[in-house]
Image (cartoon, rainbow, N blue to C red; front, side, top):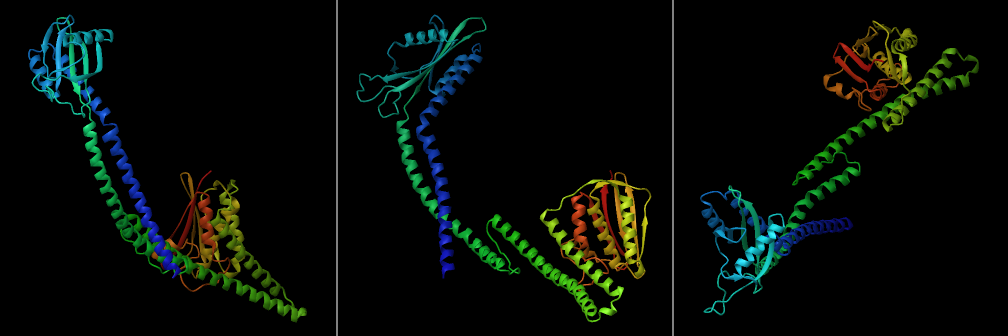
Length: 489
């Protein structure tokens, strides 16, 4: 019951979070709309008018000597609602248009134009100004304006006056005088505000609807994944995750399925490892106890063979414990390399000789083939351990002829060491897995002639620490070749 309440609470929280995100996004959009459509609308309007009038002035300047200049001025005046005059600096009009109706300033029109030209002379031949204007009433129209009606709730309009002094092809300076009405946009802003209130209401309603719709679509697969995750946390590695909907949820589901599969493998291998280590521990402990009990009961009949057996089995236990500790150190990154330059060939030769002494009574024959001696920069102790593990693996699995061949080959700046046995070989599908932790090829644990059975995992970690390469080549019935390569000093 409590779990169900928690689940319902989490679903409600998810819906409110999604609603909050959508509402915040809508609020941001509305703020931007209000900002640009109301507060900044007048500023944008003014800037656009300035850009238009400057562009038209430049076009007139570029065509000042054109025979069809009057047609161009007329077209620009009509399309942009501008009054355009081209005049000499002493006030003589060359070309003129007037689309402003009867809007007048405080001075007469001609005097205004000459004042503007004078201002342009004093400002590097370019001048721009805003002037408040009031439309004049005609004698027969008391309640209206003659010309264009202002757009702004009875507030006065403004004219944008622009003057640019240019030279003609004959070298004469003329003034391009342009005026355009800038009407207040208050009524437009009011209209936009009403529209934005309606848009705000619609967006809030849509945000609520989409929030619950998306929350329902998102929360359902997450609930299923959460249930499966709890089963996985309780140790059920056969759990399957089925995520649907958004791509991220599907990818999360696939990742968790892979995780569950890998955890299942690790758990299976862990159980096998415990069983194998228990077997390897139980056998020497039983032998040690049996011989110790015999020596206790018959102290006068102690033989060197009995004490040797106890020492051998104790050494086996010590080696097993050390290998398990080494794997743990490599996995946690505790192991560090103490590198130095040393003769790899002589080190391999010494290891082979020591191992041969250990197994020669069992009839094993180990040969070492090389062309020249090689110097490498590596941790000699750990690298010797890796090679020794390869060698012991070959001894444990070689064929009835009990023959092992070690080859050293040089390829430009690298040296490759191969350990070749004549055993049963490894199935092709098992080759990628023999380096995995706890992996063994068959389900029948075999007590090694020497070593612990954990050597390949340790050897892999050591070679990786040295930045080397490693691998195995094998054919069923023809034996296997384990190899690793390092950079030559």
